[in-house]
Length: 496
Image (cartoon, rainbow, N blue to C red; front, side, top):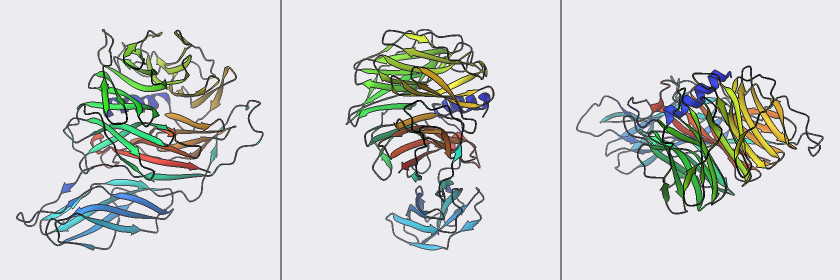
């Protein structure tokens, strides 16, 4: 993916996802067909929940209310929005209570995107759940080796064997709404995913879901209309800090285990709209957030703020012309990295990395074989001497590995990386557009899963344990490719 394409993904995603309202309705919500008898109410449906049974079969379930009339239903499915296949007609009864519409699909192609909708019909007419998509499980694991650097002396002489299993995790998506995840964080087995949710023509609001051990379920969220969360950092199940944007201004909220407390988040006096895109916490009284002001203009400038446990403050940092910060990561109070770009208007920019040494931020020049055009996308530091940075250069995507006090260049041309998380020095995961997942085995990166998917992908990942990580993001309805058809998506990545 060239740098202009990647920037279109990152910046367009921010502007589209964090807009305060969506005026155009998509096809994701229930659509009422022409009714036969206006005196009889049509059925009502909710979202479809998909459970993998095998690489070639899934189970479908969806809430359905007959609304007092004899109701039947079918599931339409196929590899495109035209579907092409339909399940047998089933009877939902004529009661007023909600029932579960269900079906099992078999004979599917492994590791493939499928479209599905529920169509329910009674004397009052027909309704549809709207188009949803799901992935079938892969039939075994296919890895594509990517070039790496010579491993340091503490790396194993042989690649570490790993077997991966990717499971699509259910999320809560009310009928008629659109939503998406942009950040996830885990404190041991407690994991929160954050983003936005709204309805066509309405105002968005923050979305928060919690990992229950089996799926992501709705959790309390900040009650700020027009706000969206872009990233979250959790130190425990009672201490999380989320950042993003509230209309044109930087925004943050703190989870104390019971409620979200919206915190006053300062904006530069000269700013004309700003956003916090990334957050990292060393302790409850030491968190950093990074983003930019005056987005998508020649006046763009890096914005870095510090949380001391009771208040946010803007911290001075070098800000070259038209600069932005995409990611921030701290491994200690005296070791933080922020990455992004400068000269980033209107398109290609130059790579920008800055480091906090406990007293001040300073630009760190990094020698790369790609020249100066490009953009750093994300940074993840596990210790003072171990970090990963992803980027997109003039000719290819790449990764940088900070080992023993110096940066090493790692070719990574087949995948644009939006986030990296590690559950050990020899096991890291990367995620990106197209629902792509990569794995670091201690010696080289490998693309484990990658789909050709236009209009979405993974934006963030986090590891809860040594064998369980989460990838979150957003998908769009490929028939409409509109922001009003966006759907949150999560995967559980289990490694053994």
